[in-house]
Image 1 (spheres, rainbow, N blue to C red):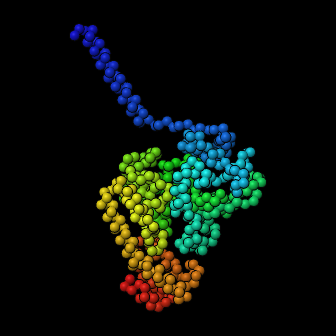
Image 2 (image 1 turned 90 degrees about the horizontal axis):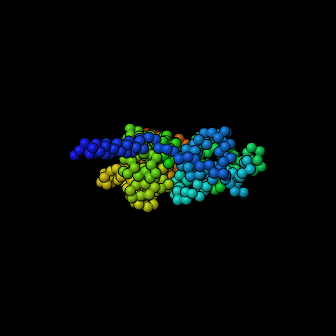
Image 3 (image 1 turned 90 degrees about the vertical axis):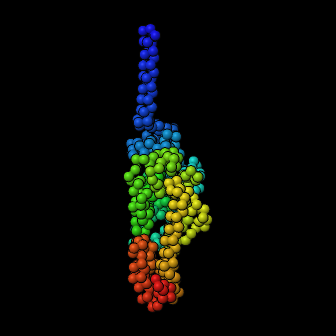
Length: 410
């Protein structure tokens, strides 16, 4: 090979290596550099809203600009626009709007999600606020305590008053019932719930709803300590340790495919698996109810259990998952047999004997009964002592010998 040919060969090889280096550099830069955010699309009907609120309430406009809604051109009027005759409609800057976008409004685009949510226990949470275990707050502290406590999570009925905001002639919202961000809130249009409880306005991010802290807004404290229990579990510890690997912003977010670090509440109760679609019915995979004192299996509990086990099997072997639920059912069945069942029978017998009144929480034993599955009743270490020395002790004072009738050898 002559000198000229050698020069040409070296030049070709050098160009090849240079091209390879440039290609690798480009690929790595695309991977490492932050992804460019899509720009917000401000349509004509939303332009005046964005301009005004960018001055008066800039944070909500910034939140919206960072949302997926904004990149798709879904803006203020798409959610807040009201029709004439709607109970909470009022005229604002020559437009008829509603302060509260409801699940009925969201259903125009998210029909499946709205139907699933409407079928869930979340949607009926406001209707449950007067039951035994949640009535206590209002009975003890009155309506203001219920507004600032129970109803903040369960929701309430939002009422519309005559005479409107900002001098308008249409209805305004009763300040005793609004603001309220309860998951089962009953809205002026008759719909139930608030999507913004989990997908906080005005970003409405799925990434936020996938994190257990969103559930912890309500599922926390002595009545329902799910967040504390989760946080101390292996699952919760792993999420904290590997939070950067959770890929919360993934479009699908399937365990074992889009992430494998650990599960959050949403992983097991709502999110898609390789064999199940995502659901907004949070009870669809729950086989047993722990709210009543006697834990009961729901209708179609076998199907619900199968679905939950499908979520577990994304990380665990099928035998491990099956054995876990054998242990869980055994614990709950034993609690029902030893504590909950006898206590329920004793309370019913005391009512039949006229030893306690129909009014709630006006006798000491009713507080002891309530605490059998709340507060200290949530602790396996303390439940036996609470049952014997608080509950049965009070029962004996009211009806001597009743323990022998219903709780012998307990």
